[in-house]
Each structure stands twice: as structure tokens, then as C-alpha cells.
Length: 142
Image (cartoon, rainbow, N blue to C red; front, side):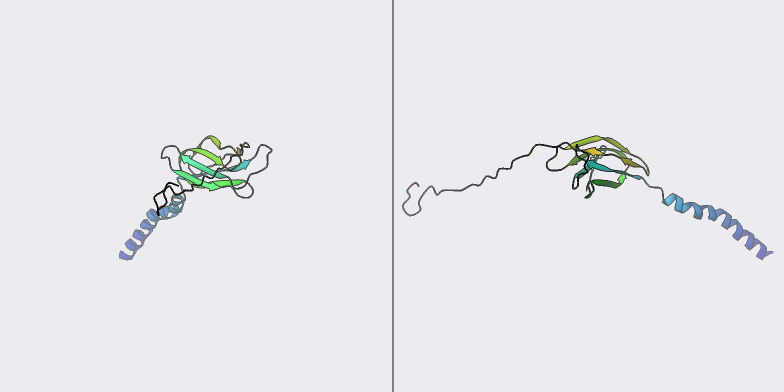
């Protein structure tokens, strides 16, 4: 009798515990993240490498950045859920501000960006040279 109760108790425990063991990996695979990916091209349609992509989470103002690959492709992965403002920057092009993108659970949002050719900017280097105002030997200005 005791053996039978023990076996029935073990079987009951297995029936109760088994669904939790089976469902645990499914629950662990749920993520609270998403991805924004896409390409960056110029007005001719050529893909542009080495563009800095920045996504700013609208609610938290946190920035996530990545460069485009040599093929002009980017992916911002594991972004927390929410709304993002995406921008693209590269020398020789105007900064592109993309539309706002919503990242939802497990989603991948595609945002392709076209950069406009920008103006060439000049850089001026200013160097300061000091002429001595007084000669230390005789106090002349000079």
C-alpha cells in the first residue's frame, strides 16, 4: 500500500511539474527587444559605406549608434521597445533625419535612408604667435 501511494504521489508531481518544465524555454525566449535595419544610399541609388546611424529612444533620450558596412547596410539590434528617431551622418552629405520608428516585441523594422549630397565645408586652422612686447634686457617695446 505504501509503495502504491508513493508511486501515485510521484506520478501526480510529474503531471504538475512537467508543464512548467516544458513551457519554461518558451517563456525564456520571449524578448522585450526589437531591431531597426536598412540600407543607406546616395541620390543615384549607390549604397554608401561608413555612415553613422544613430537611433534615439524618444522617451529616455538614450542613443544607440552603429556604422553602415562597406555594403551600406546597418542593423541596430536588441533595442528596447519604444519609439526612435533615426538619423544618418557622413562627411560630404547632409544629415538625414528619418521618420520616427516604433520598435515592438521581437520585431524587425526596415528603414532605408537616402542621403543628399552636401556642401563641401572648409576648415580653417588659426595659429597664434606671440611677438615679445618688451625686451627683458632694456625694457623697450618691441
